[in-house]
Length: 156
Image (cartoon, rainbow, N blue to C red):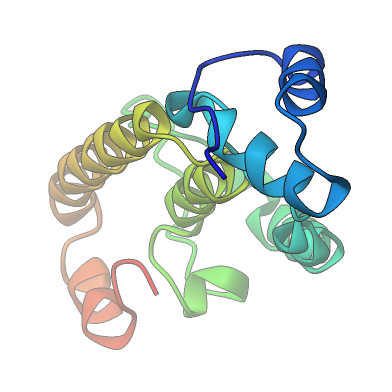
């Protein structure tokens, strides 16, 4: 039995299945093979979304521990106090770790090669920003930041 490989919509898939005399046991296989591979995503469900409540709690903890220190980028006008407690006791860059996890999560849910390129580029740009911020932190906080770097990893 041949399965037609084509880039067609689901309604066209159903007509093609009926027209080619495929029985119901082969319908799922035919649909899977006739989908557009570039935009293919998981049809079995999204087990990755089971992490959402846990990640939401992590987000709440992050918001509490950041306090007034929440910012992205370099603020030369208001350097503030060096944050080393809360989530900063485990990662020097928790918000960039969260951004990277969001990108990876998007790829896991909507797997395609365009998102893979997006994730790679995003993570490279985040790492570049981290390196720029580290230079600024070394100049601004000196020995205190150096000690913090020895105790806490850059990401996780």
